[in-house]
Length: 294
Image 1: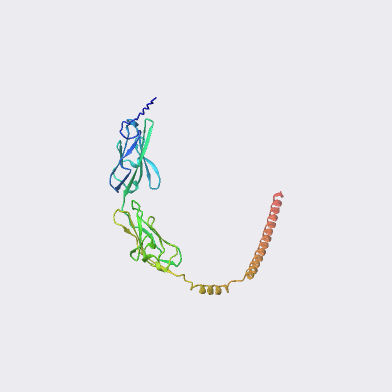
Image 2: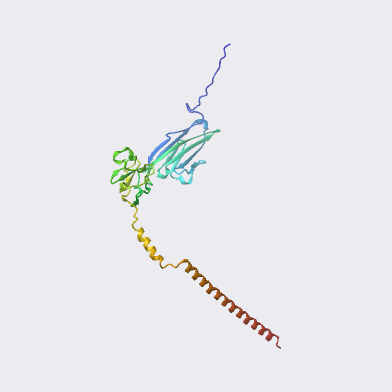
């Protein structure tokens, strides 16, 4: 006996897209600062003729908020964006607009969302670096470099005596005696145990592929041995000063004597108070006598 199995495939009226699907023009967009940009977002017809469309923005710090909600542009974005069935358009972007944009569509009991990553391109600015001018041999020393403006975030390079330092010195014969650790992403240059070989002029460079790389100020860092030559002089000075410092026994005797003086003064004050109280009592008695006379 033959059994026939019929399988029915359902094809959406929107073509190859699955039911209740949101589609974005590009998941990642880059645009220069102060230029306009379109974030295209479309959806399948099964959401209905008037679906609910919302746009959310999450910045680089992780804060998320609506920019288009309940059919209206939020106050912070009025005059900056326009929204229609084809997506969202910025009239002019700033570096603060870098982040993730969620296009959310719901209707006819269906829901879907897609994210567009927008990167506003900004050249690096002159980085701020922290380089000590004098350090002690064997100490842990960390140099830092930071560019606050570059978008995408800058990567960093360090120079010593105008020569670029490789990220890993152990791979280069001319740098194998150096033991620094460089992080090209956060801009740090660390010497776990600095030596006199590390003495020199240092500066850092920030670059992100947008505009020319920017260099920080050059600082000459001197590495010297710890100076112990002043130790005997200090000890001698302390010994001389100690001659004029009273002994513990003398101090105790002085304190006891002073305490005795305070006690004597306290007794005298109490006697004076008693005398005053006696005079007051006499005055009260005199007043009573005067009050009883006809």
